[in-house]
Amino acid sequence: MSTDSATPRSDFATTMQIIPVVFFTFLCYLTIGIPLAVLPGYVHDDLGYSAILAGAAISVQYLATLASRPLAGRSADTLGPKRTVSIGLLGCGASGVLLLVAVLCGRWPVLSLGLLVCSRLVLGFGESLCGTGAILWGIGRVGTSNNAKVISWNGIATYGALAVGAPLGVAIAHAVGFAALGILVILLAALGFYLARPIAPVPIVHGERMSYRSVLTRVLPHGIGLALG
Image (cartoon, rainbow, N blue to C red; front, side, top):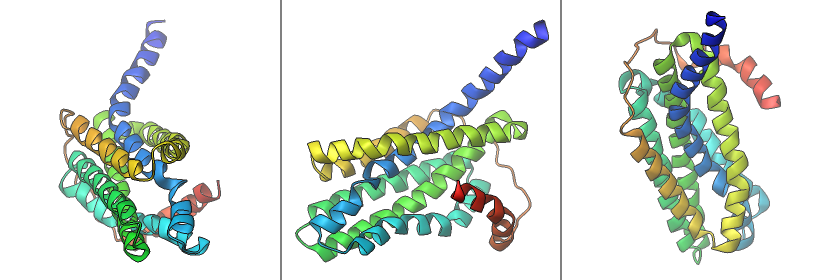
């Protein structure tokens, strides 16, 4: 009975070590979710561009995320997961600044769209570093035997933030205006950066270096399954 009663406490303690760091993933994806449902309409209706261009301007973020994955991995291997998360949050904050300026420049559609695309690119960079760093930070806190638990909680934080952020962004945009979205993104990123400071870093683990192509080839079949899901 003592062994059985100790197991839930051990699992709970492990979870409590994971949640503080995947919370930064939640904040990061909240900065993604808040403008996600609003910006296509802004580009199409307010700036006057086609629906295809509006979708492309928003989707460019995910190309930046994919392209910056190798950088995120190298950063975690050299600077450590904590600093990688902090840099990612700074990227999210910078995207909020660019988003705010893009909305303020709405009288000039070309300039506004250009700033918005830059905002999405920087946000993709921040997403990549923050998400990668948070997973490795969590693994460093609880050990590789809990990899699946860290990744699972990180996924909950990711999709939970998107689920909360999208309707929240719509409500804020209707109630206050598009500019408020940029301000909120900046505040969320600043909050994450501040909260990350007192949490202890984990030792940097130097693993075997693999080419990006090799990693992509191994992950791709499983990633396609996730994409289809």
